[in-house]
Image (cartoon, rainbow, N blue to C red; front, side):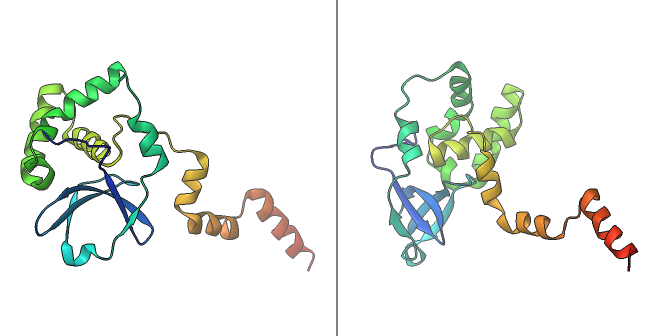
Length: 168
């Protein structure tokens, strides 16, 4: 079974994004994005030298100290538990997708949901998502926000522009 070994977990960073190191192999390492959980990916030892070790995120440490699981979290863990049993589901996408489809069929859900829960658990140790705060949503795309403020004309603002042009 893949152990979500929180005591010995390692986080690395590259180009401002944080990744969790899941598995070390002789040829390289398997990582998953901590900030945007998705499928684990392999990084060769040659390329891994570009990654810098960073401190374990505070929110990760707080999450791992949670003792009791809620009923919903227990049900979610039961969905992904078969994926955690074997290491091959971490490294083999085809086997992972087949098992996720089988789990989804048995539990009347989608394989996409099963995989999303699996990736989130691998990356963050959480079984439930944390709602995004307003600040985090705006932090995601500051260019979009700046563009909207600069080029978007509300009806009130557009009316003021037209009234100034009428007098000329």
